Image 1: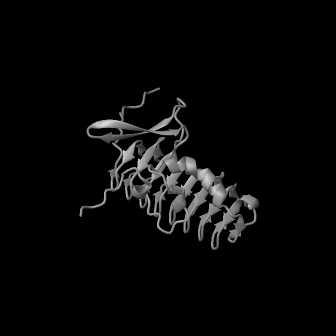
Image 2: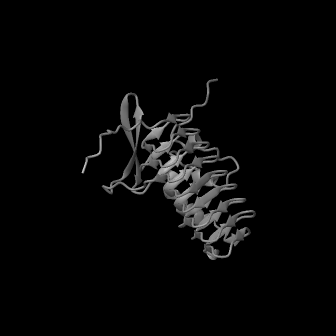
Image 3: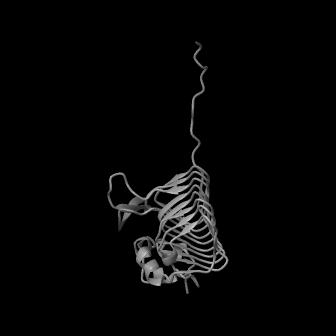
Length: 239
């Protein structure tokens, strides 16, 4: 009996969802990006507002619309708007801004001056500082380098397509979305100061070197090194 083939764009290709509270979000979905549009309604459906973690003095949390689980902390200066769910043993650093329709798993770190909106972050993932992450799905055990952002809107305002190479051609998969950032699979590492353009799919355990500008689909285990830029050195003009 041959190996079971997994659709490369299915949720299972990007995430191990066994035992995850987000597993039901993906039920019945055939393409991973379909969960981006489904995330707000899913969070609103399962949200049970409760504060079991710590909120430091000087933080602002939308108490009636946020679930903060045991061992988690929101540091002073952070803002957490609802509806938002934050798992166990997760820290939200000073001056982070969670804008709502966000679900963060266990053992995560949302760092200083990081902004999240309509985003899923699974367990043991770090989004450490000066990140902007919007309409995006991030797997477990992921590291997002500082100053990395997900662009989620085309300047043309058109629907975002997923563009992937297949059989020597570029094939486009329509998403039906005009706001869609990225999908980052389990175990991926994205270097600092990278830009994930609208509709970027990063497979499991990819390694992205810093200052990369990415689009389209990166298969699992890919290594991405930006090409070195060239520049010219000439003598300074004399006064």
